[in-house]
Image (cartoon, rainbow, N blue to C red; front, side, top):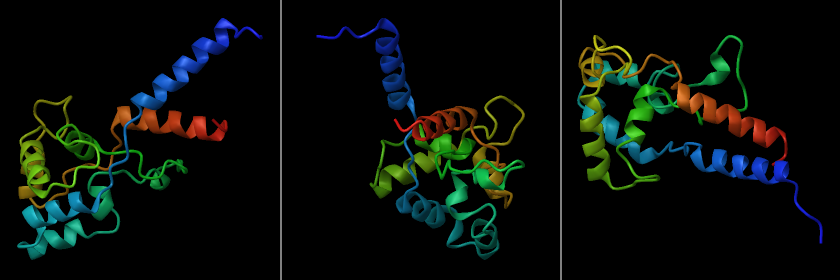
Amino acid sequence: MKKVSPFVLVLSVAVVGLLLAAPSVDARKEYKDAFYEKYVDDNADYKEVADAKVGGRCWLCHVNMSKFDPPEKGLGKRVRNNYGFALSQFLEEKEKDAEKIAEALEQVAALKSDPEDDESPTFGELIESGKLPHDGVPNADDLEAARAWKAEKAAGK
């Protein structure tokens, strides 16, 4: 029987740890529907903003990394912005319950849009002022995890 080298064992444990720690991708129609019901459906002006191809729809929570300079392709919708990341903190993975999603939207509205800046507006204040609840910048933790996922995928693991 062959012995497994300590290096291979440690590397295997590290890979499993990264996979378990990677954020899930929760682009869900229910989330967008709840957002639209709460903020968009009764506000024609905001509907144009929320429907914008550049910043709205899926990009309410996610960041299109292929639009960056230089583009970072192959990450799909694995990278969320601060709004999407904050929303994920209040929802179970793959949550479909409309009441729970609405409650999470309410909780996130009270949070600062930039957790590093006490002077930043809340997500709710951004929405009330007619802006999207994000700045198109990836959440650092999500970006790091997505890059690790892409590297693992490229390595064939």
